[in-house]
Image 1: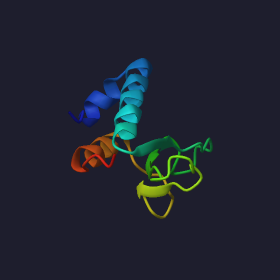
Image 2: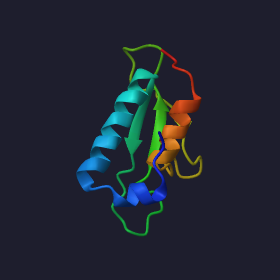
Image 3: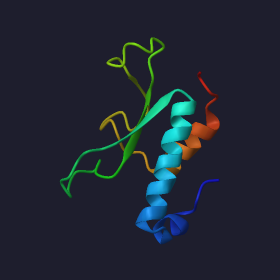
Image 4: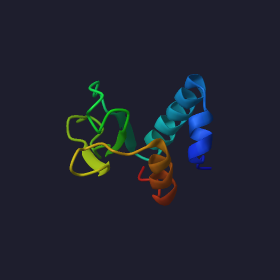
Length: 94
């Protein structure tokens, strides 16, 4: 279930973090890795946004992730609601 913008804004920090962790687990089950931008500059448009990286088929080589979903200009740019939509539309890879 994708929460509305009002529901997201009404979430406490703890609720938001739980939702984020649940999405991380779901992404991992489907063969993706959910990453949050590490930007700290308030003027950086990627601050607080996410991207999904596809895990390599060779589980021993984790240095070759491929971008599965994000704004391809910045490399991030997804909200958690976008992540939910992507994961619900994609079929499990693994």
